[in-house]
Image (cartoon, rainbow over all chains, first blue to last red; front, top):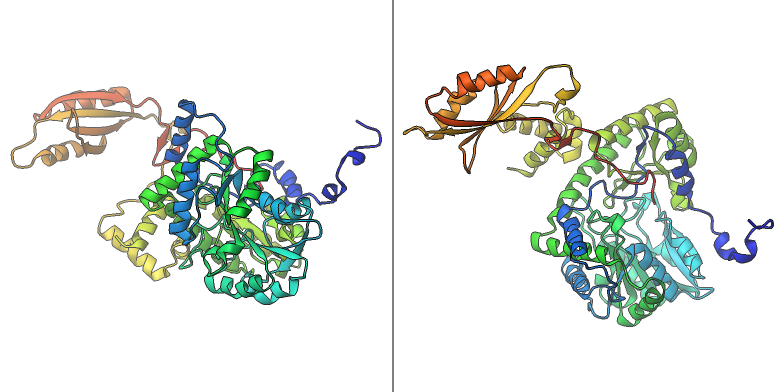
Length: 396
Length: 163
């Protein structure tokens, strides 16, 4: 250990980025026994067995080599079929699709390929914790665009317009949204398109939760809007829809010229996504194509029941809870308790052993809310909800 | 089967003690609709009983279980049904299935002791004139029933909190 530390060797702009607000909670929650966690960010299903089995077989057959930088062509063809038939967005598997290590790598690649020092990237908030730091690591400046509970956490054109400056280069569009569960329907997206065109912006549309929408709502992809295909990098993956978080496979699609630059970073930095994961991902899409995405439907139906239970239970506690139509989170407001999000979550964990994530971990505009994931068995959810109700009664 | 019926069966199978209010919330149907649908399912004998899954090995109750493969001569007019009925009337018999393959009926039998069970097979089951042969297999250990794993929980390897 150097007596004067390592500051000389570390990049100050990286050091200056605060650690994720989730991290502290993780350290606290993971030391406590008998905690029911609503703080997870992944499905409670295991990857469907036939998908796992395909990966096992590929290992038995010795398929352990690198793949093409852009990913197995057979997988890219399945992705192209899926996007064309599911979202109505055509992509050429040879030139317009890049398979990445999770959607996370795709976000990082997109930003690093696009952002130069001084460029601003618009990040709607509350949203996934990685966007703003990734913009900073890429050398750019993240600009938060608030979304409001009163607007169902949809991004409104007036808020977008107010955040655009001559330095703005791109907009991240994270819907269905983590942590709010908010979605953007076709009309909501259409309202943004004129601004994107007028200010000559690129959209990075993170659609990782696209399969998880509820009620009569279905996902609409920004690239499916007239003239917007050219201005969109569409990011998706297998983690949420197919319960494949640990496999780390995602993808990014867009105009060939852009994808080839993303691929340049990917090829030097990563080489290729793990073959085993790619094989499993291909099987997930192949099965889905053949059985009408039955695995996804079963999981979605199960999430939907739990979603209703959560919303109704929080409302019964007297908390305001906006109805989320996407992802697997509810984002109730805890303002009526007079506590901050962090105070609420810390005390809830201490007193009732239920872990939830304070809303301000997802940007300042998340303050006053908490994120509760309902991808947990119903009996556990019911216990957690009873404990939260006891907690809210005791503190109001 | 309606969508609501199907959803209720799934939910009740997972936890038959879920109150009507929660079932209504989770299916998006009204309380009355849920109550009526469940009554209907009961009336049509689709739901027959609400029974817990019990791990008897953790209790002090003596209990032996066996699966008996039974070969029978089907009766002229009644086929296998009449033979099955003769067998399922015994209190020791918990389940009876007509099977494809090398035997006809699979009979799940439960008794307090090995001796009781042996005497059931030799004195009651084998002596039925239509039974032409039996092969008894004792259950040594139960790992999973009705989707529930008996020893330890299925592990949840997820991080307690993740973004």
